[in-house]
Amino acid sequence: MSTPDEENVEHERLERARARVSEAGRHQSNAAVMFHTALGDRLGIGVTDWKILGLLEENGPLTAGELVRLCGLAPASVTGVADRLERRGYVRRRKDERDGRRVLVELGPDLPGDVQRLFAGFLRRLDGLLERYDARELEAFADLLEEVARIQTESAAELTEEGEQGAGARR
Image 1 (cartoon, rainbow, N blue to C red):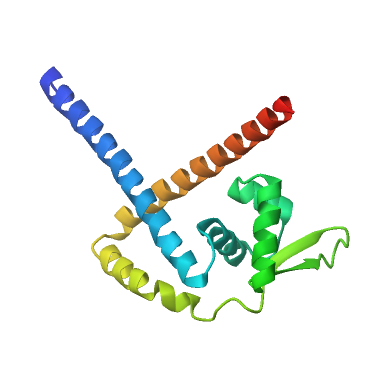
Image 2 (cartoon, one colour; image 1 turned 60 degrees about the vertical axis):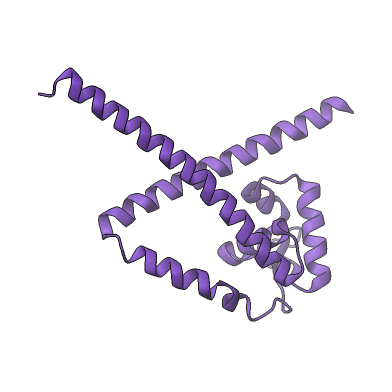
């Protein structure tokens, strides 16, 4: 059984660790935004447009409504992004073969083939970092990152929903 002093030390250690994770998360988030902004700049598009391309790469063809749900943007914003990307040939719209009423957005033919090359340096460094950890630690990191992504996605959807409700009330 631990003593009150030991419990206090452990509590303080836990609080410091939580604060460190929170601060590291903010730093990582900022670094990710800057990295993806630089990638978008290389393609001549904004970071939001770049992230929509990432969602299409990850999920395959999606409806505008599905993109809204996944990215947390307002429907009009998603339409604007799709319009810009379609003009560049980075995405195309097509009717859903199973339901002709639905329109899907999918990656287009003009997306530069060297996109993967733009990631090469980052992925090489990331692989080097991950080699420092064992499977148990990596599984814990993956669990944490998956939950953070889920929480951020839910929070973005809530902000979008609140914004749409607020916009309706202001009209």
